Amino acid sequence: MTKKALLSITLIGLLAFGVGMGTYAWFTSQATSSNNSFATGTLALATAGEGSINIDLNTANLQPGDILTGDDTTEFASITIENDGSLNMATFGRFTVDGNLADDMIITDYKAEFFHKEDSQPYRVDNFIENGVKHNDQFASNMYDWVNGNGPLDIPGTAWDEEALKPGDYFTITFRLVYDKNATAQGETANLGYEVYGTQVREGAIQALNLEGVSDEYIANYAYPYLLNQVSPE
Image (cartoon, rainbow, N blue to C red; front, side, top):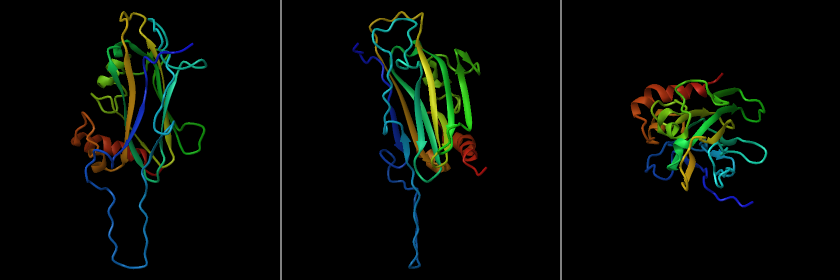
């Protein structure tokens, strides 16, 4: 059966020094002696699917109560974000929705699992919503509320989820979406996206991202100390 793409999800990776970041440079060095060498580190954000994720969503002729995510073997979708460079990395990710169906996208499950390089077992698991039960009443139960500031609550009032990764480490977000059983909209379309930004775990580098809704003061007092603690030596 041919499926009509009604919803799509794309993971967009942008680095802190690149398009839109002006001429600000975070790597500088000066040498006055001879016969010496030094090497700068690297910052590379890796995503499954070489930068983009096309998740198979059950989106043809949706009816109230239908499951949006998954395929023939699972009802869940997943996004993996990896630090593929040699420097510690701060990451900021969020869902985006275009269209009029966001409040009908019910989030029944959402968790994030964190892995060290080459480890098969997560060193940390954050369960936000499980089988329709929110582990914190503040978490949003539909995508409209999630993208409007009641999602992971890492940065209150925004959709941003902030994490820090050591080189080679990665995390996977697994989630399940259902089309609201009480939905009445017909003939509507929507686009579901996920974007992520990566930069150095430095206060100024994070501020240079100019993240929507995130002040420099918040970064200095809360975000940067939190992210630095995540990648501090154990």
